[in-house]
Length: 94
Image 1 (cartoon, helix red, strand yellow):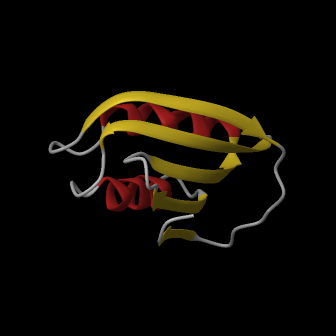
Image 2 (image 1 turned 60 degrees about the vertical axis):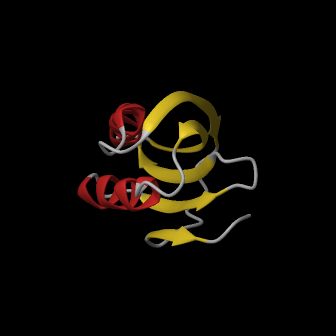
Image 3 (image 1 turned 90 degrees about the vertical axis):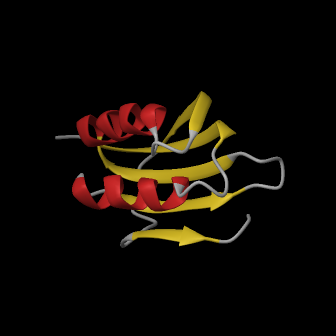
């Protein structure tokens, strides 16, 4: 079991449709830590840490999103695991 970190930028219709709460629920179910916030450009930024398999499953879930969302892309940047987060939170911009 190797721990990893990832920074994700999700584009499409992802604001005002419950997308961050969807991220929160999926992260809790997969025992991941991190945060999700809306960006000024209409995207959602997610920082996540945890087991690599769980993070990969999380990314696949985010490609689907809640029924009211329309995800057109996810940019993934893998980063070193630093145990920065104790839980998963929904935050404001930036």
